[in-house]
Image (cartoon, rainbow, N blue to C red; front, top):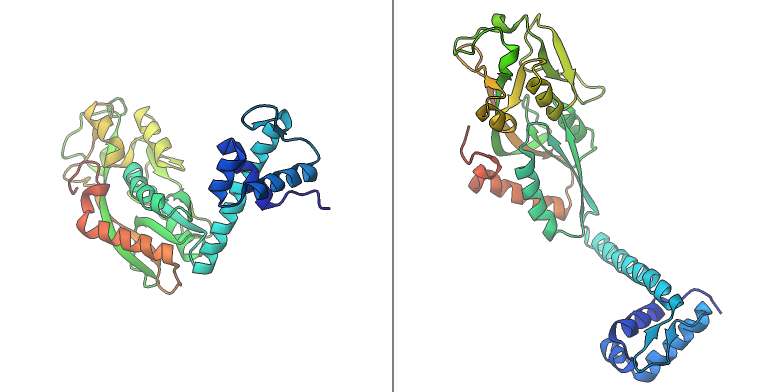
Length: 309
């Protein structure tokens, strides 16, 4: 006889421990009292220890039964998950969706939209990346992700896009860094002696991009926006930041805007991006439709200020 309990035995055992009596377990399982009793006896014979204490009015677990129940729950749940996954594969649905978010995305609002979607699509696991500069495009074009949310540096016929939101990028600095009072006519030359903080491109084997880099200025490079913001707050450099990330710093006077006649910043439209000639599964298609709806009728959802920049 095999010493491995069957799934049927485990299900009967868990029903009995949950209901507390053979009659209730039999009703729950739609089986006879005799069938449940025999299944539990066979389970104990298979395991080789007593799992139930039958000395009282209600069925209770022995110490071995308590330990066994924990493992039985895990095994039954794992089997149910495997069955669900097999059904998903038969239906053609994806086991996971790989999504990369660009570094300028309003993260909380973007994740809120994805969270709403994946709370419904519970059988597909989201795999999220966060990358800077050209890395989101590189990951998408090289097939490492299924979807990107990022701005576009140039038209790319291999990418299909849906506009989602705009991000305003502005030059900022800590007041202590500046040897002058901020004013609307600050020239690039006024900033050239000061250290500028820029992002390192996250893509490998890709033409490195740079934005708003002032020729001739000393630079410090970092790998993400959070570190860049902290560099600016400490007065170690000035640089361009997405406005939504520094709005509170500007309002609190920790940073000042250098925008003016000669330093205008930029507004970067952001898109949902996917490869045009790739076969997309049903869950990816539903997510694309959801994002397409947001880009038209719910455009301001992603803007933390509730208005277009």
